[in-house]
Length: 369
Ligand code: M6R
Image 1 (tube, rainbow, N blue to C red):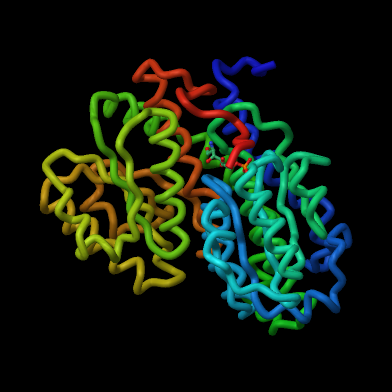
Image 2 (image 1 turned 90 degrees about the horizontal axis):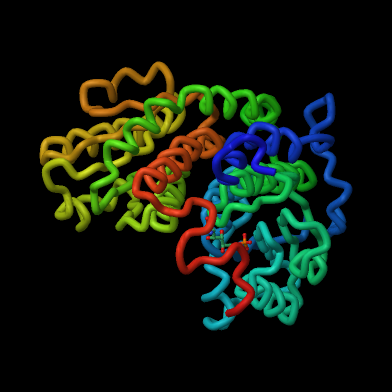
């Protein structure tokens, strides 16, 4: 059942192009419009939404952090993202016009379930983004958008994450569509790129051998840091989470702009630092800033592992290791940038002799609060 792979995680990483394509299937029509009729919240209700609140845990929370950038940019509706375990304990401000999105692979995560119950008690509509048909979270929600990743067995979430991102992009674009947000060239281009993105994920997978080799060479390290900006920041958090749960290493993700406010003190000779570089074409200011961050940490001896778009030459002089990813629109970059981080964590865990599919102390679905 592992389909020839040593671990479910490897199989699930490899299945990502299909999982992404399946999650898009039938949801974008030939004219480039979105058809999400399965969403049981009417267009009229969606037009009334004045705030989106996303609740989730772990990897699903990271998908939510990325969704915030897309929702706010494409729809101009304010969006908050909160750890489901914190949500109901702080008396959040919710009403009938708030749309709460609960993201969960398993659909059984107790923290997320309690957050959605709390939201419904306040009169808010809840939309679940879920991978498991008929599980508790979609059953208790007003509407559901299923991700079509297929069963995810490995404790570390991989293909579910990519499909959660796709579902979030679809919801954001759909909200924009029903609300008549100015449908500029950018949105059309994004929808086109989204419909080709599974091929780009496939291309990334084909070039992972050097990442595996690098991971093996770092098996005796204690700490790895991850830096990113904009949507690359949640990608950095996700890279660090994967490494914690699989390799049992100290791994932390930072917003690169925060480096100078503290974390730069951690930089010491030979410390591996993974940097997710934004596209030089999109928000080029951020690109330039992150290039100077890479210079700064390298000057302090860090071993820089740079994930950058093909054709980005500015990073070359400062990268001890360079991982190329295909060019994508800024907001879609996490779909390709996360893949090397999954492979990196999986290989490092294997090199350290850890049980990849079943890391210590963890369960696939966390059904207690
Ligand atoms: O099933 P869920 O998506 O609700 O699970 C949420 C988290 O428990 C989950 O993403 C966890 O962080 C994974 N082990 C991460 O790889």
